[in-house]
Length: 526
Image 1 (cartoon, one colour):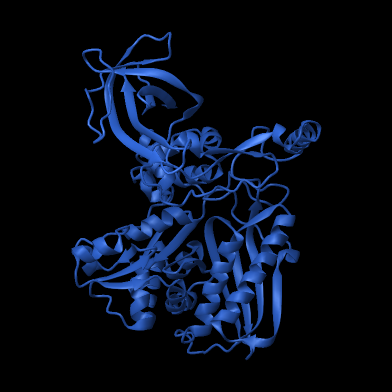
Image 2 (cartoon, rainbow, N blue to C red):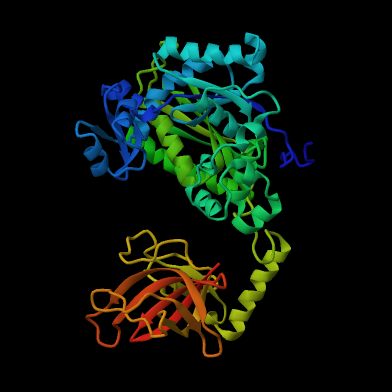
């Protein structure tokens, strides 16, 4: 049912969707554009890790996520290439054109995958199976590229169906998804957290109450929860926004260089993002229109699972312009593109952008504004440091990573992405005490456990007493020690401790440290 405002809500049924997926696309694109042999062992790298490996490389043990050196160790004759999104886009442009030649409304998901509504092609070709087969055949004939098509309710389920090469019967999408691994969501952090909570499949995740998922994990997890249940992946289907949201740029001289196009793309993306932000909106589906110096009109639609940031808009616009300017023309029609004379961005799908997670005083509106005014008023009366918020910085110990900043100041984390040798393994503790609690850790004979200079233990930890009044509890599991020797060069600032994770018989798990011959408990695990 549609809202009176025109925005389509969470209850909208998902549309039967065809997703076309070309396996190992960055490898195939390297063969199309640069001539690298995709049938040999090839790996495309991003940030020194394998992004995509060819079938021959996978047969040698090369897997996604491996570091470059490890991948080359498994396959000494591996051809290593750096990831080039522009190359992927240029190679994929003829594939999109081939699909558009027999079906309307093709939407770009990413280089190597596109989507379109199934209803039109299915009615024209005599059924969904026939339509999918015709599209795959068209790509093979026009582009000499292998592709797979999948059909299901919603883009997410259809994408997984395409990888499996299946057509999910109408109404069976939730059942199709229920047995798949939680990693299919493509959100590693969320998947890791859910696995630790005992949730391993999409069906188990979908069974959780949606409101509880939003409360506990935030807005992105709520979108993922809808994906897991086979429902539409956004609070949409997208509506057509008012015309005044479009942004356009006409160039005095046609743009025919990729670097100049990238500069124009960034400026135009920022204008679109600012205009949407002024209306409290965010973009989920973006149409890019270009008019060449010869008068040819080019149009491409990009779709995204989530909200497009200004960087995401700029990246997609740059990739698309790279494909139009450096591609070899439209192989399906035989035309060639000149310089770009005019660009226009059309946010075809928008949603209200209320933030990623409800705050303590609600999502938005008067309650939030009233709380902000009250906190600012307190600062005016008592000083800026009277109201503080926490920022999680980089570091080795959870207690030292918490930094308090004044309300309203920039909450910029420092050193989060930097490597921290000696950092505790995850998960992080749920409660970090403001002041460490004195404790005792004893071996089976009741003697205090000590750590020697070579990290050898004087005895196996068997029991722990936390606080002066508490009775000793048995230790059923432990890990460590993890030593820290910080700022040894600074008098009065040096810190040398050994850290342990202790699992107690009363089901508590704590982070204990041995410092200066005394034991303390710094944190409690949930």
